[in-house]
Amino acid sequence: MAAKPGRGASPQPGARSNATCRGVDARPRAFYSSTVTHPLGGKTSIAIGVMLVLLAIPYTTPSLARFRVARAPWDKADPAAETMAEAATGGVPAPAPTQGETSLAASKNEATVTNALPEAPALAQPSAASLAKTKGSIAIDDPSGHALDAFYTRLAHTKNKEAGAVTRILHYGDSVLTSDYVSGTMRRKMQAEFGDAGHGFILVAKPWDWYFHNDVIQGATEGWSSSRVTGPFVKDTMYGVGGVSFTGSVGARSWYGTGTGQTYGKKVSRFDVYYLETPNGGEVELEAQINGERKNERFSTKGDTKTSRIKSFSVPDGEAKMTLKVVSGSPRLFGVALEREEPGVIYDSLGANGGRGELLGAMDADHWKEQMDLRDPALVMLHYGTNESEGMVSKDAYEKTLRALVDKVKAAAPKASVLVVAPLDRAEKNEATGALHTKPVIKKLVECQKKVAAEANVGFWNTYEAMGGDGSMASWVKKGLAGSDLTHPSPQGAEILGDLLYKALTSGYEAWPGSKAGGQPHPTD
Image (tube, rainbow, N blue to C red; front, side):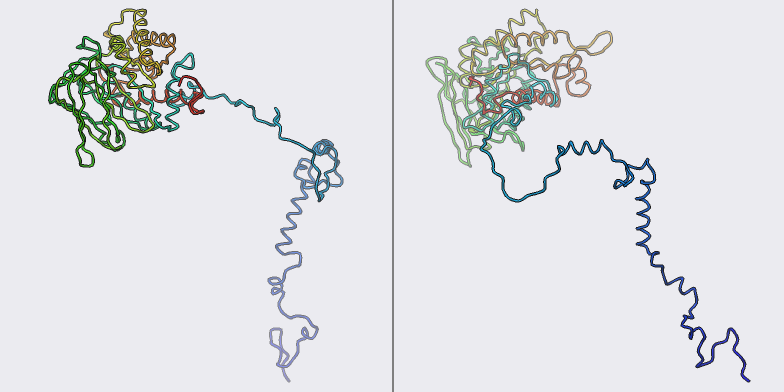
């Protein structure tokens, strides 16, 4: 008799399980738990459920009512919110969009106080003082507001690149300018902004050891003698526009040319020789090498009377060098100006060692007028005070002397503006403490210059204040911006001063109404 299978025994082949016969899957319960998911137990359903719970929370908590996405039926309406909504729409329901056209009434473009900009700008034009301050300088004092109109008018024509629009600046002064300090920086900056019309006026030879000009070549042989506004003097007091008169002996030579640097003073198209025609004149030869060929011209300086003249020697615009040679007699010459046939600025540095305003003022008035007519300046700057600080007699006497100089310049150059430029600060040492302080006379000179400039209706720029005012020279010496003589700037200091003066002049120009109107707002041109 066959044995009955036990619980762990396998069914006999061909036998059918009771479970199978009842239609029930005989697979273990664990199989279902790992492979079959409830219809509401999926990830999407769970996410929706979480979201609904979060949305429901604000409706169960009054303090979170602001987070409700819709007003619940049991919530009371917010009267304030409804009032604001009605106010926004005027209480009228928003119109439904329509199609078609709307007839328009007759109309025209009319300016009113509510729809048009005012005729005059509502924002005031920036002042020269604010512009200069923004640039880090101080403005030029001009109480009348028109002292520099003539200069700014010419500058506007130059800025517009009008044919023949040259703005010449004559900067007179003492030893600070003898080495083209301050003026050298001014020339570079003004020409970069308004155009390069040439380097300008250079003396025939070197009358002082300090004499130097940036961005040009210049030299001379022996055979020249000179008389100067600072002495030795010439009896007729005719010193030319540069304040020095030269007499050449036969064979004496001098030469002038464009600079050897990479940026500045690279072009010239005309060498203008300034000379005095006299009964005892002589003959002069001018020579240049042009494209490998020699060009030369001769001219005579003889005449019946003493008269200021110019001899022009033209070359192709570009780099060039001209040599001047005395051929016969004893010609009397003043200098050579390097210029170009281009709109731009020309900046003459006319410093004299030991220069003082009263010495320049001793020049023959008619002669100076002739020289100014030939030079045609737009601006004449008078930069004195350093040497006057050695022996100022009285404020009244100094003011009288300065006013006479200003009036003489205005008479010699009536079409030009005049600008008085204050001296630099000057320091002296306290013998007891060794500390450096400003010489008191400097402050007095600055006060006098400012007063005279206002009374004479000319501009005034306060170099002393621009440097920093009281005690500034001592600070500059410590920084290496001035020399141990406590008087003169170093090249670096001079560049700073030139930059400050440039910013003052250009700030005044930018604030001047004519700078925006083609340079013709005033009848001074």
